[in-house]
Image 1: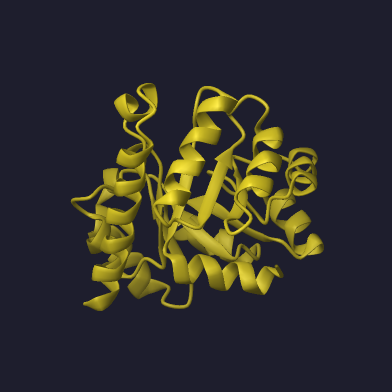
Image 2: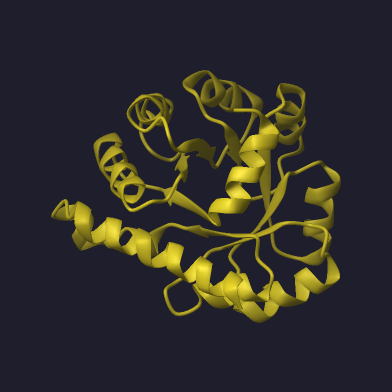
Length: 215
């Protein structure tokens, strides 16, 4: 899959599921559950033990899913993730060296940002998307709408506090996609290995994206 195809897939999907778990086993379970619910873009954060191994395993077991790495801090980690099969790299803040590395490797990357200046800096560094995080805590969909009006040419991913109550509102306000973590993976569902519950949540969030775009 080329970087152009990955970008198009993320835009079409509208959701990047962020898998941030305490163990590799839990991460594998969570990723497989949301994939069963129809989410086809998954970010495995590097806070997970043996994250590169998790990515490599998921690339094999979920070949229809675009797998990426989250929280990439430097080019050494970026290389490990690409070798494991990651198709995109993300960070919670601007990491110019990671973006530069991604550009040279023809791999999709997107930086975290919060303020208008940070959004501009991330875009000018050639970030493919700009992840606005944490967005719910500083104005939610109203803030995303303001950024979208200022920068209509920049594809924004709303992340941090996206929930069933506001998901469609973020899309309607101008977000290209949603970054969703905790709301997809209730602690009880993880503890009891309730895959069906997580899959149903994934379907609900995909419905929220469709609803927001429909308006």
